[in-house]
Length: 342
Image 1 (cartoon, rainbow, N blue to C red):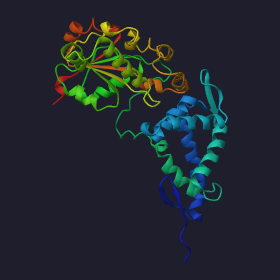
Image 2 (image 1 turned 180 degrees about the vertical axis):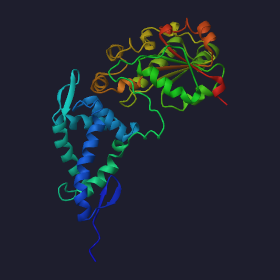
Image 3 (image 1 turned 90 degrees about the vertical axis):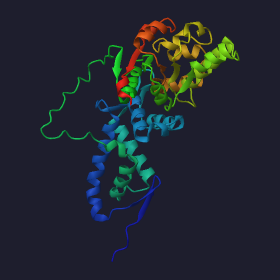
Image 4 (image 1 turned 135 degrees about the vertical axis):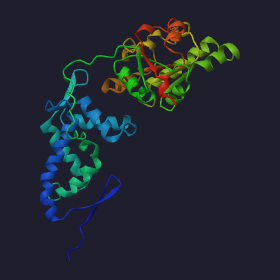
């Protein structure tokens, strides 16, 4: 009776290595898997991996919350060492040939296996470590007419706002609006469940009802104190341990006057992502040069946007909020259908 096949421990898990017969088939499968992984990163299928494609791919593979600043730096370092050409400003690109050579070296080192002699063992490791790269779309059932895909070269257009969505569609609508660099205004028509629902998300929160109480009822905060408080929340949204977060402005049923609060410490450009660029934010001293460098190295700035929530309906929003916010006409107003909330 032959001895048991050795085991290899990889990424916290133990895999049983295939025997010699399995390794013969493993060589073919290994080539196929590496090709699938490459296509996973090369999103536009142009035969080279761009720096942002590399970062996006690794974020999808690792998971957003595990893909922090330290991991990003390692990915960029590997990308450059693999032979990427170009600059972060003009674009950095890694050819398929250079990627394949560097990736083969990487998986040999990470898997602890001999690629030539133990391809089956490497296949087992790849399936675990790079599992998200092999997820494909579900096939269309027989008899179903598949939708014609949109022309990928056609520019995306934002919806015509305001729009009305169900509560279950809200986060998708917010993400879409943010992708067009819109300040998002969510109206819940008198229902506070929407603000409660969104409060569970990770963000930097400004509670306007609390500010009103502190400034005008208890008088424990001056206007200057409130501006400092808000500025701190803005800075946290733009730089939260190296990452970016949404800035959630919770209005509830108030008409907090943001035009009155804006000034040197709270710039009016806050309410226009197109105006509040990385350069403008740095000039406003909302973060330092080190963080500016990180923002210019990848696309994490997309995770920062302003989300305003109110329990007003559309009519009350126009009546009580339109003159309280800079850039109000440019907002992406999303109305949550009250009937979708039980």
